[in-house]
Picture 1: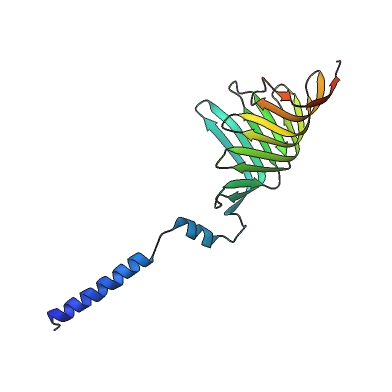
Picture 2: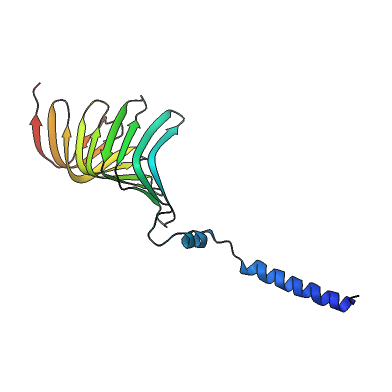
Length: 185
C-alpha cells in the first residue's frame, strides 16, 4: 500500500509533467504551413482548372487553365497559371467577353488578375484588344494596362500606350494614342 505522501508526490509529478507538455506544444498554423512546404514551392498544384465565379445575379466569370500553382501559403498570397489562362467574363446582361493569355496571376488579397504574354481580349460585340499585359480588378470590374496595345473595333484599329475600360466596355479607351487606321467596310 502506498502512503498519502507517496500519492501526493505521484500526483505532483503527473501534474508537472502534464503542464509542461501542455505549454510546450503550441499550435501555430503558420509554423506548420512553413514546415510542410519547401521554400519557394507552391502549397498545391492543380491541373485542368475550370472555376466558375458567381454572385446573386448569376455567372460572372469562368476561369480555365491547364495548370494552377497555389501560393496561398505566402504572406502575399496568389495563384499562378504558368501554362496560360482562358477567362470568360459576363456583364449584367449576360454578354460574354473572353480573354486569353500565356501566363496569369491572381492575387488573393487585392482581387487583381494579372495576365501576361500574347493577351487577346475579345468583347461581346467583337472588338479585340491585343496587349503584352492586362490587369483585371475584380472589385471594381475594371481592365487596364500601361503597356502598348492595339484595339480593333468594327471601323478602326487604334494603337497606343495603355488601355482603360469597365468590364462591359461601354467606356473602353486606348491611352496615349499614336496611330488610328480607319476601316471602310
